[in-house]
Image (cartoon, rainbow, N blue to C red):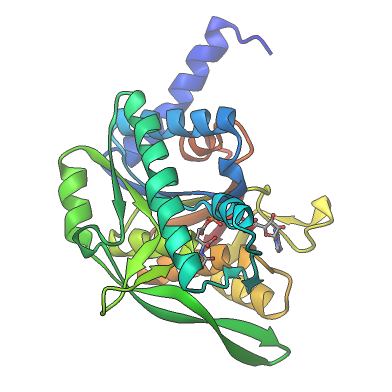
Length: 295
Ligand SMILES: Nc1ncnc2c1ncn2[C@@H]1O[C@H](COP(=O)(O)OP(=O)(O)O)[C@@H](O)[C@H]1O
Ligand SMILES: CC(=O)N[C@@H](CCC(=O)OP(=O)(O)O)C(=O)O
């Protein structure tokens, strides 16, 4: 589609109130999973984050890399197993997760951002003890009861070192965080990146938490496109997890939204990372996209 000069100017002017609104504000972006596998799309996500930075937003990136971990495990003949959206993580798997997330995915995002003229700094939860963690048990809903399952070196966040993040943000850096936590005996924990993004957004009292994923947002029945939900309240979201409407990898995302709202983040959105420039569409246009989970 070709735009006239007038249309182009209108689009820029339309963005102005949003640029004003978010100037100086912190926005946490969870970038991961299947929205990360396509290189062209990846480049567009990086452009969006750089653009946010250039108009005065303080972006913080938390990344996943589940498909990369699965791919690497496959190469060594190891099958991946998930319980309630979380990877069952034995000692070998946590080492591989750390290697892939910190050594490969994090450095790649950092260099792609730096290539666009912004200053990105890669961190894992071990840097300045950014993510203190402890073991997490998976919750399996069975009717009205919840069964707790031990899934190995999977962690939950105990504490985020906000000082290091604020120091970096104040110095104009974009922190890029890999979701590996450190336990009290210096052990590594594999943490779902959605939860890390939520804790980071809550701890920083971020204006927004944006979770990019591989689907338009939340559906009452995700095989039926007509059941799309654009806004969910906290209570509705909790009910949809309990009754199984929200399942698999969507559980950590919705729980992440709930947790960051409780911890003090402003708004949370689950948006389609497969859509070109979904981040700037969400932030700088009146329509917004995806599903928002609100108080
Ligand atoms: N109610 C729901 N609405 C939308 N997607 C859902 C729902 N319940 C489960 N899902 C699944 O959750 C997936 C998103 O989780 P996941 O693939 O783990 O995301 P990512 O890889 O982006 O972290 C969707 O592709 C979909 O298959
Ligand atoms: C415990 C757990 O499940 N950890 C995740 C960490 C990476 C991640 O969250 O990646 P995505 O955001 O790409 O799914 C995993 O091992 O896949």
